[in-house]
Amino acid sequence: MFTATSSPTVALRRLEWDSLHFGVPVAELPVPEMNDEDLWGALTTARAEGLRLVYWATYRERTLPADLLAEFHGLAVNHRVKFVASLNDLRQSQTLTPPRSPGRCVDYRVGELPRGPASRELLQLSIVAGGHSRFHVDPRIPAGQFRELYEVWMNRSTLGELADVVLVATPSNAPDDFAGVITLSETAGAGQIGLLAVREDRRGQGVATLLMTAAHDWLRQRSATEVSVVTQLENRAACGLYSRWNCEAVEVRQWFHFWPQAADEGR
Ligand SMILES: CC(C)(COP(=O)(O)OP(=O)(O)OC[C@H]1O[C@@H](n2cnc3c(N)ncnc32)[C@H](O)[C@@H]1OP(=O)(O)O)[C@@H](O)C(=O)NCCC(=O)NCCS
Image 1 (cartoon, rainbow, N blue to C red):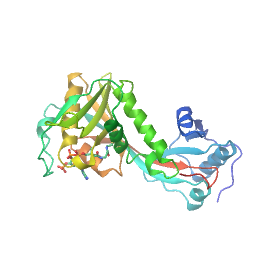
Image 2: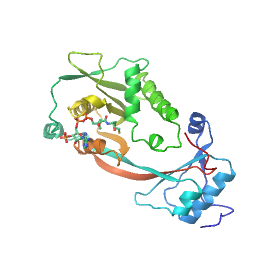
Image 3: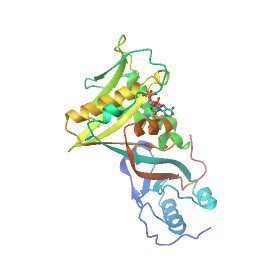
Image 4: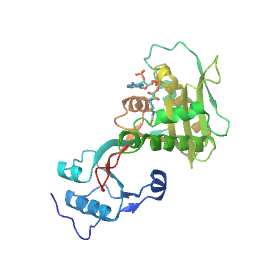
């Protein structure tokens, strides 16, 4: 066990939006590399300052001593991975092999959703999209607050605030029956995928493949040259999907959550 340093070298950065959303003071440790002693000192300071939740994004293989995790109620929540793919290779869509999935019994169409508040179906899909998110994985975060986070994200996307376009996949014979959704934005030639989800009972039928193809087409029409997406290494389906588009993992960070106050936090 380390003793607390009186003046830790790493400053905590308070997060206003997160504090407001979760209703408790939240901060992050903004540097990925810290030794155990500095980390212990920073978390002691966080405790003294009344912070309830502290995020830390560090290197992929970082391990922490059990006594530190126990003292600050720390949890390794997941590994965030950022994928980037070039859109310049015109042959890419031709070389893409169709999914092996056998259940392609229904024809799907992909179309742009008109702007407006998100429907109940889309809000449900937003929660599906966040299934591997650290806010879902951490059992100390109330389930309702996790859901609200993703619902706000979806609603602000369909309103055009957090996305430039929302594409939905529907069976050709049931245009109001949303099987899957992808949200996209584009800035200065760089495309970004926000939310992606396929309804559980529609998976393995190539719906995400159709959505990704339509997303790439939309971005190419806007002359975008690359697309990026963030997911978790633990999300094997998403990683498998993105690797089919020659996505390259450009950054992997392991995320920890610490609850420095007491053991009585929780759902
Ligand atoms: C990831 C997800 C969108 C895939 O949707 P889908 O419509 O079932 O995917 P497709 O049928 O188009 O499959 C395309 C490829 O994705 C990969 N894939 C899909 N499901 C997979 C699984 N369970 N395990 C591993 N790879 C998988 C495969 O590479 C597959 O190609 P293959 O069939 O040739 O192996 C879906 O599982 C989902 O909604 N998951 C929950 C939400 C989520 O994780 N969203 C991404 C957040 S970043």
